[in-house]
Length: 248
Image (tube, rainbow, N blue to C red; front, side, top):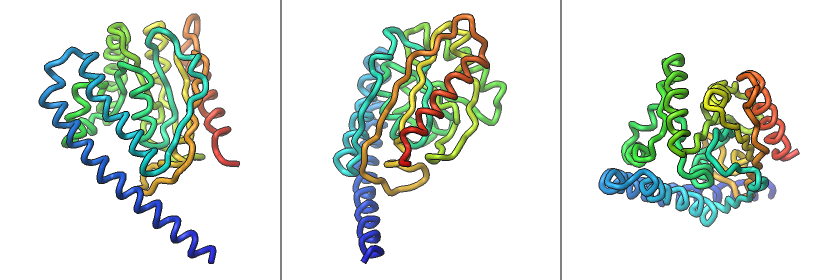
């Protein structure tokens, strides 16, 4: 009886995920075409607002179709001026969430994403920092150069230091680029942790209903600190907080 219940539950999750991706793909096509036809004629803040409507759509679709709800804790910790935001990376969900919470922003991502039809077309007007990770030294220089420029122009910088999506409970290596950029630009680091991987697991089509909790920590000052000190502080906070959000 238990096996039958599990089978029916899994089938329902897969069916809902299939429906989600049909409408998700439809949205990608629309926003990709908008990115080509309209967004480049607008100033950056208007471009960002227009294209980021897809973020609203993706989060709404995940909630309505798959039952993925979310809540914030620590919104009062967000500074009044843009800084470097650092988050754990468990799924695609948090990329849409941070794209709305920190506006306008320049997301640090891998260059290959820009080449995906429709999806990449939608990304281009958002002025991301697209890195060639096969050349780490050049990628770091690009991050520091373009990141500082984006901060000075009033953009938030969102970085996922693990570089790729990591399954909940697994440990990925944290790159020091976020700490280096923040120290160089003289801005704080805002640490963020969540448990989106419990509902939207990386590398899986199926999605599970549930509540995603997004924890926003207090800004980590970079004044008088080394890159290593800032890096250790943000990594410790994110790893420790993310662990408290996992089912025991």
